Image (tube, rainbow, N blue to C red; front, side, top):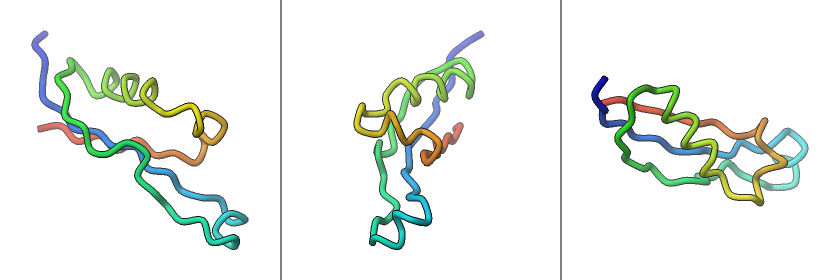
Length: 68
C-alpha cells in the first residue's frame, strides 16, 4: 500500500464552564501536511503530537483530518 497525502489539525474546544470564564476555542496544532497510509495512521500521529499541557483535556480536542 502506498502512502497518500493528508492534512491534519488539532482544535481545542473549551467546556461550558471555561466558556463562561472567557476561554475560547483555539488551534493547538496548525494544519500539518504528512504522508500516511491511512486516515487511522494520521489520527494516531496527530494524537501523539498533542502538547503535554493539553494531555488532561483530550476529551475537549478535535482532530480534523483531510485527505487529498
